[in-house]
Image 1: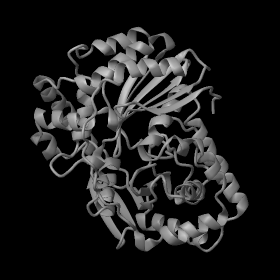
Image 2: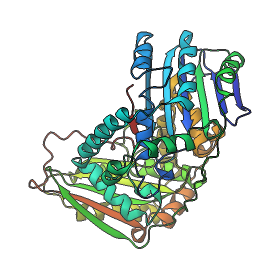
Image 3: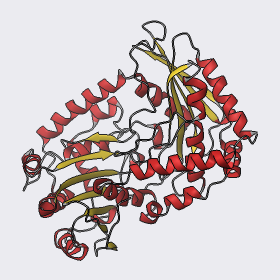
Image 4: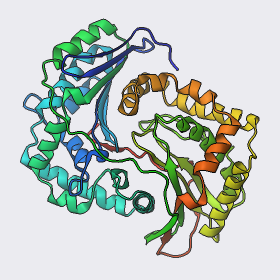
Length: 451
């Protein structure tokens, strides 16, 4: 990771958390504004509202018309965008250090000044419905949706971030604006900033722009976490295409659970190191993983990967694969079970764990090595824990032992506690022609906005 200088972690009088980290390696600054609201905070009839509100944050305030700030940031050579996930919504800009005032002004204005003009709401409804329609033609989206619904009884993690079509058609401007006013308050937000600046001076700039924004009463999210998947179940979906996709899912620990880093090491052994950075980064493949050797090299699958993410409540660890021509889902599951039986039976050495830790550590470092990624991690960690989680991750990872990995597999990665999902193509037998070898599917976070 980049060396850094002064760090500040403080809270303004209105409850806004501020994290600043001087990183003088390049003449840029990266600003991220995080709000503790995502699809986890949505109820029946309002799915997708957090993602839609994110889109509306690019549609203008009284001070900044729609498109005005996009042109301003482009003129100075900057980039900006936004993302919505299950647990949070975030907005970021990376610009030359001389343009810090520009992006601070924008984000302070968007925190309480977005207009939600009716015509813009109507326009974005069309955009999001089109996005949803496109996703419904994606086999991996359809399969993941079915698996999540089977894996959760009632927790909002079972819902897609983009929302249900019926809800997107029913919600109106007042629904969106009310959601915005409830959750886009300083006491529900975190500012994370890294780059070439003086931290004390930057804090005063932030204080001057944000501290006068009044705090608000934010609804408490009262959802109950869910435990092991019980009983085991299999779901099947079908649709266009020629490829058969298989997904296996088990409950994963929340980010603050000590077992989170154990799963990171076990996943590295089994399916390859998981990229925890939902924004970007990575760079480590999974060719050394057990399932790559067992499934790809044997010709059973043409793509294999594993995935889990840092979350507030227990999530899912998934293994996903694309079958080769002539292979069957039953055969793939049989091979996965064989590898898990070996792990549960104690066939894990400290040498193998050491290699897995090295790979997981490298993936983590590659996803947090530049200024934008450092700023991302400062705020991201605050969404489910605090910045200490980020700073101490490698140390916790290095403490995992072979006994930890074996014990985790015995407790959690059991056949009776999983969902098996199968996507069967309607257009014929599975074919691997022209399919790019894959280490995993796209990031879970929905990226929106105009950046």
